[in-house]
Length: 389
Ligand SMILES: [Zn+2]
Image (cartoon, rainbow, N blue to C red):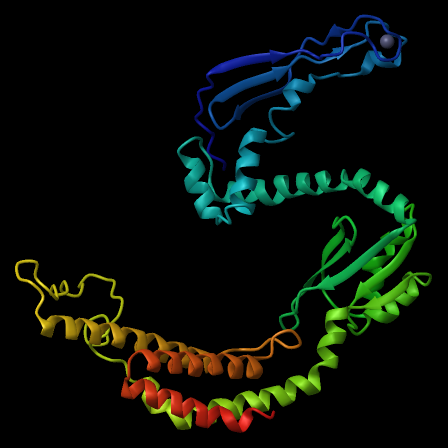
């Protein structure tokens, strides 16, 4: 049994149809003597009790005599069958889609303003908000018309998200020039009949499909040829480029592995050392949680003038800090990841390690440090065999 809502509406509003005359014969409307749309509606700021008195034509012979014309304004407050205002729906949609809020979070955000259950938040989003959004998308058709007219048809891109073993997969058909989504849907299978069913409604558009852009997904190529036989089918350039670059990417991956191995052999032990004085407390860097690190002891007290000894340690700790950063950077460079065909990690690692070596040399010219010299020599020795490659 449903628990009745205990709501105390702050206001009672009876609406009348905005239309004053019969749309059939033009006679003045009269009101039925009952109320429809009689409900309590919760909006974000108040609870309203609304109703509308339907109107009809007074002429018994007019088709308008059996009409029940209701107020448009009343219908703009809440969707049919719902006691939550459109403003509540908009808030739910906004929180969900722009703030990425969970249903629980949306419920918490709304519960201070109105009476709603967590499951009803979910219901309103899935069964009212999303269908309304879909209706809104359909109205974007007028934006498609000028684009299609200008180019004499539409060019579409077809793509889906990578599947998770056996799960339905989401697919999109977008118009390329305008970026409008023509169709999006979950496909239970990625085979020719499913793709054909997904593409078929495109043939009812009033414009021809000039070209289709997609990858070479199994089933998709014959489906496009079957449903859109007059369209050009272009495979994705990025996929082409990736396939073209494959031999290069493979050679590159070998280079990367060998380069890393050699560099680690030469300077691996060296760059794993963190000078303990450089920063933090004995190699411990950032600490959060209940038990913080004790505050660092001030290095120089303001009460006495800096002695030559103080300045020497200050300079040494500055040098330590520079070297720590160089070592960390070198370690980071040994972990670079590529993304063929655009980003090739081996070549990038080589170039950037070369920069580190150059930087070490420049620093050595300023101030000699045995660790820096070791890093420079090690990097030179490791990199030089790869210069030719
Ligand atoms: Zn009439």
